Amino acid sequence: MTPQDVQMRGARACAAVVLYRPDPLLLVRQAEGLRGCPLFAFANGPVDVEAIEALAPTALRLLSSPKNVGLARGLNAVMEAAAHEGFTHVMLLDQDSEPPTGILETLTERSLALESQGEKIAVLAPRLVPPQDGFYKPLRYEWRGKPRADGLAAVDFAPTSGSVVSVGAYEAVGPFRDDFFIAGIDVEWGFRAWDRGWGSHIATDLAVPHRWGEAVSQDELGKAQILRHSPVRNYYYARNVIATARLRHVPLRWRAKSCAGLFAQIGLLALKGQPGSLRPVRTGLHDGFRGRLGPAPASLA
Image 1: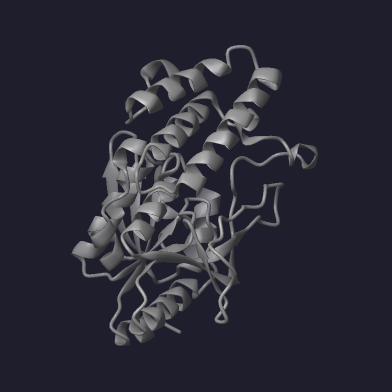
Image 2 (image 1 turned 45 degrees about the vertical axis):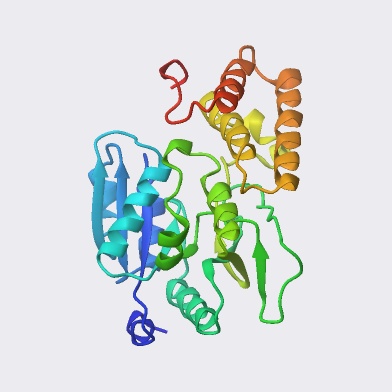
């Protein structure tokens, strides 16, 4: 199916990515899968010319900010720009995503079919799998019941990478939380969408390679993320888990599960982390409980 086929069905589909210190070689792979497709790219701070040139095979629309304003604001910028140009569906991508050729059209066509049956689809996404190169942990989904007969499976939230977001749903649910900055953005928005009657689903028969977290050695595959992430990432993780748990539209079961997981990982950090590694987490917990969001304190950057 081609972009022209999708447009004939009453939709206009595009892709979008937020760039922050991207690897040009990975962008080359991404652009090849999106050859000829409209792509909104938000340069979140300075981006090398080589990285921008890597996206040349796409029909590129470049937006930019001179400084890092956070992933959420970048996602909102590309969604708003796409809506302004009349696009109805936007496939959001991480900067290291490698979408197969045609997956944008396939997911958009399926979303249209569901919408024509009266379903309110906020997000339709492929199943994310580790790439063949390097060692990356597989992603765990938060399923909402069993898969349907058509192969779709409902999830509490769909990870950003590869997700085709309905512009109509985005306008109804509201923008991504700019003040979350980087962590848990898709989690909060997914629960907010369900709360307002819009569902998130995974097309279990479609797969996209996804690099979740940093590459590790084979021996480190079971290592907890809080031991692998940078201090500032751990700050955002701790802060935004607490901030999400304080929201009324987030189910109690998720609040309990996410907080239990957080404090279990903090215990691991206390036992196995580097000296001083608890300080960013303590700051994150404090800021999460008092509602201090936005960029991390300068002392942690």
